[in-house]
Length: 196
Figure 1 (cartoon, rainbow, N blue to C red):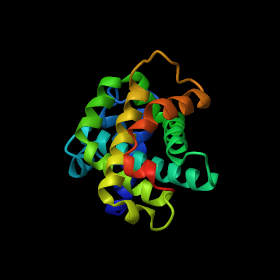
Figure 2 (cartoon, one colour; figure 1 turned 135 degrees about the vertical axis):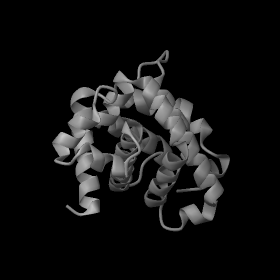
Figure 3 (cartoon, rainbow, N blue to C red; figure 1 turned 180 degrees about the horizontal axis):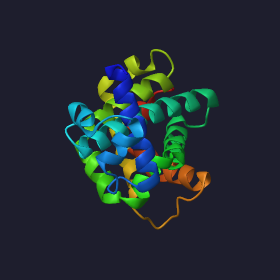
Figure 4 (cartoon, rainbow, N blue to C red; figure 1 turned 120 degrees about the vertical axis):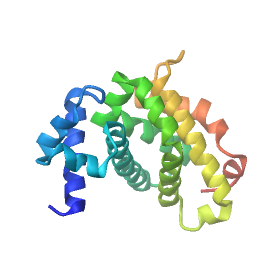
């Protein structure tokens, strides 16, 4: 296997192990066995289990944000793109077997990873927004405004996914109502004033 194929096999194996057993209960020996590589090969690519977890999360988040962008673009005109984008993001995250398992089984680890990789996640959300916005809109409102929106999305998404609240967020209608009442007011004023 080439280096990229080997890394991909390791990430696939780790994802399968994390999905089956959770993040904290997986040993690198199990990942190595499933990937068909030695433990040493894993250590050549990742400093340890925590770095491997982070790499899996990064890859899964990349795919998830791309999927969210595609979904939003397929919806067509909506009453409010920000509410719809937030709602779809929460639903897609909850539907993802491994990311949702991290949130439900190991919320402390989820917060730790969010803290350690916030900058990378912010970059991904910003890139997803570039795909969701009509051509030229991001340039019109400016990179600072787009980054502020990405930051608001991440903060409110973490709150909705990790913290209990007075209102349930069990259905898509619940999430959409939360997005309209709680998230929408946090959208930068420049975006609320501009037509998407």
